[in-house]
Length: 292
Length: 122
Image (cartoon, rainbow over the protein chains, first blue to last red):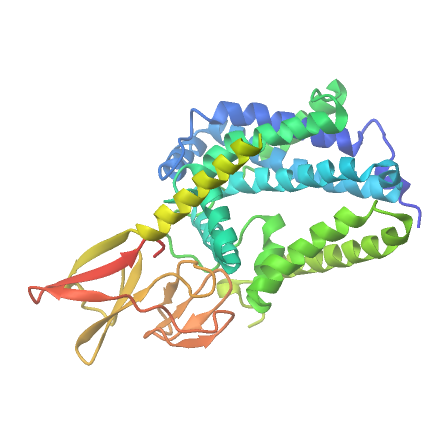
């Protein structure tokens, strides 16, 4: 099946790599503007609620949030394009390792932004993550300490605003030897994000103490949430994600390994997309199916 | 560089040890007279009376720690993250939790104050 129509550059559809880079830069600039407006720690949600009460504040936050989503989507399409065109064959394994690390950091960067909001949804997500990491004994405790600090205060915000941002920018530079996106794609992406943010301002989540029918995380997290509702924690939270990363890592190792690694990666991805669809569209109050 | 790496790892180990040895215990005080309804919902715990004696349950779901909520219509306690259900007394009914809600230790001061012991993770 010819999928080039998804990847051909056109005036109205620039390259996915450039879109990803543009989204990263827009997120960076909007993020820097948000830092003085949203303090780290327990007051984050209160300040954010006040910020989105003002139209320009809501626009700024929405642009930042949507640019994170576009960054992840653009990266996924970019990876798909380069796997489809078999560009991975020209990579040395060491170079590929840096790419896998960049991919993981990118997901952590966007996810930590969600976690630092302090809403009911993000607090629940932190609990879930801590619970999964808790399966890994000392390693999990170290991970929790690093990501969330001793008292779940400002640590995740600091990681979002500095640690993961800096590392992602540095690894992006190592990847393409620049961080300035193409001007046409940058302004194209910025316009799309501004229009989207103006028409559909982002919902910041429920207050931490509110009683809600169901807690749903961001779209890229819901697949994991759905898996955790019916699979054991060690399988859904640890084995499957590690298998996903591992299969992706093995793709350029050798021609013999490429096909089975790609098949496993594709299967796991399709499974995750299915779980994501179930969680998004078929789960209602108390995470029960809509027809119950 | 090797020495720096070992030093950083040692520092993390020290922090972990500190965390284990000095796990913070928090005491929440609640006047017994406030427990009028069948299930009292606090920020971190539920309190109900069984044979006139109070029982305290952690609001953290035993599955992955989400904050449990009372389902007013049925009196059940439910998890909004993955759908685990418990009776009003914390007994497991269904869902991925697979175990009862955690009971929290407590004491009664002067016959009128309920002192509930929470650890750092409750």
